[in-house]
Length: 237
Ligand SMILES: C[S@@+](CC[C@H](N)C(=O)[O-])C[C@H]1O[C@@H](n2cnc3c(N)ncnc32)[C@H](O)[C@@H]1O
Image (cartoon, rainbow, N blue to C red; front, side, top):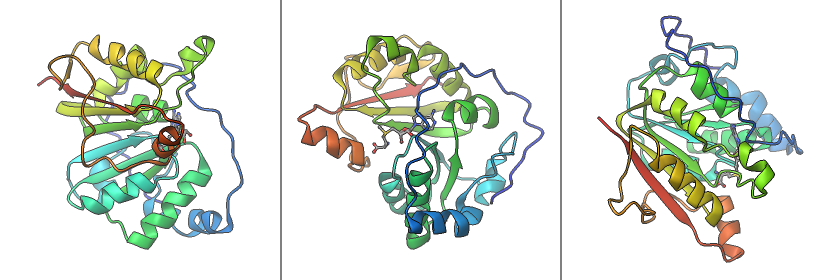
């Protein structure tokens, strides 16, 4: 397990208390369990670390992408393989997904991928140093469609404020969703965040960037006939 504490990093903000997931452990396959036992030491980050030293984690300084809620991690592994000059940090609460990504990361011998198994709200609000990310990607976040559950949506003003702390000036926030209601909600939240600017000058959704692979939940959405929305915002310099 990668132990990478940077105790000099004191600039930590209080995270909003958003519970954006349901902790359903699910069944680990034998392969996923083996990957958690054998590969975590290579790709996993010690959850006890209070402040991440990213250069130590990755063994180099390189542009860094954070993938929040990577699911089974297939899309993240594809992106990491396609861009060896970039480092990728994936965060996911669901252990079978983490096990799945560990299997792929080992099979592809990915040197530029590290995994945080836990809550992204905690990682961003309490563990990451300021201005460390070049891109944050949130692909197909849980839509929480019922009005009484909207407070569980990840993309809320308080959460986006904590994202701004860890995103470098010029850094990108990339959201994709197949839920039209969430797309409109997220567009309004990002649009109203001081310090973020829509890369689409008409204030609309973005064209799908070529580097975003088809994700598992995107495929599900397409099967159901849903329209996919991409949102691309940049942090002002
Ligand atoms: C609908 S799935 C999308 C998975 C993947 N990005 C895809 O497109 O196939 C949303 C994922 O986000 C994860 N998730 C939700 N809230 C999270 C949080 N606060 N921290 C880490 N993971 C979270 C869930 O466990 C779930 O795997």
